[in-house]
Length: 442
Image (cartoon, rainbow, N blue to C red):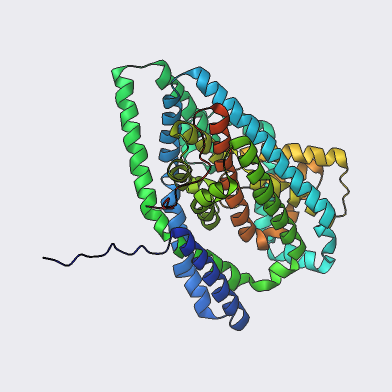
């Protein structure tokens, strides 16, 4: 007889590996910047290995976003069973998103008014930050000048769904198309439409399986991103914009660890500890990718497997949320606009700040769920309130790190919205605690 073998030891959970990749990448990058910042091998390593690997990782996720988003949302609508249920779910999602996003922006505006980060920068430091990012800032300002709120609303209805699938700025168009497709599927129950629904189930399962394979590369990708960031910039840029970074992180902390737990507890009926334990993999994946869209597969799996939300609700809320529910992005946009106003000595009164709040809520809905997707929207808002859009170059040095932080808040907010909508809609009794064996991966 063969000796009884013990169960295979499980490796480190994915979220622990992501944290290790973040720490190692940052530490090694800072050491390299301090000891050999201009070494030729660093440039070659970045150009020919780290940057291509990081981009390939993101491309692997992005290439599946459209089929996953389409199949998840169509199936979510179809499983609701009737148009009235869709309407109720849609209105709840819209109202909760608007209220909590507004709270996030308000927290950001309060923090920036209290800390006044724009008054701590010297003219010499402003000029240096601007000059080092002049070309990129001009490009973003041009994109911002081409945006307006009415265009964002009109483009929700795509005139060409194929072109919308290839444009990161038109993800809401895909959401609208999928909603219409799902409604048609509900209104026309025939053997043919049932067969199509089964095919969509297959497409969804294939996408989820492939994403599960690709996401195992996340720790290595986040190592690459953090090494490149720290080796290039070092601590100098972070310290020079320290007040701005502190303001953003403080606002994110307050919203993420005060507002969202209270919201989940009292509106969603779930223990905040259970919520954070169940959603940690999606939050850290969002931090690693800096993209709500790329994190969507993990967010969907976490909602169903860890938080045990009904899939007909979670697929609808989270798929819409990946394109339109951006708490962290709206918060960051509000802080950045007021920060730049302080830098340029432009006083924005209560009326102007309320306008900024509304614009940030709308801008958060229209922001592409991709890395740095909020920058053109910030440039647009700057133009509306009378600030030079090129001023965004001041914060580009720290934007990558802050983009990772605010995307993590975006995804956490999406999951919190799904919890609340599920509970308030009566589709399920959200558990107070999760099973002790509930993992964060396959």
